[in-house]
Image (cartoon, rainbow, N blue to C red; front, side):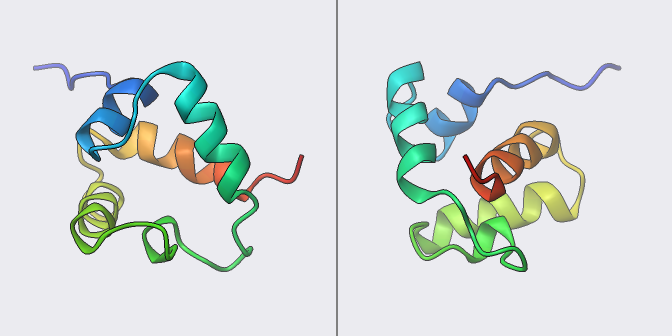
Amino acid sequence: MERPVHSMNNLFAQLGKPSDDDAIERFIETYRPLAGAMQLHEASFWSASQACFLHEALLHDADWAEVADKLNVELHARH
């Protein structure tokens, strides 16, 4: 059975955040760059349940891991 492929829009909706492209871009621009050693789920802007979801997704290589990792890369990037 193939794993579902989730988009960044789906991830933001799952996290209860505005999930349109413009809102996602604003979110990333607002919070980047995260400190190099900070893990995605450790950022202070997540609620406890959002942080837990992201941590579990990455820790267990869940269906959401690929898109969560993409968000992690985007938030650590310096632009």
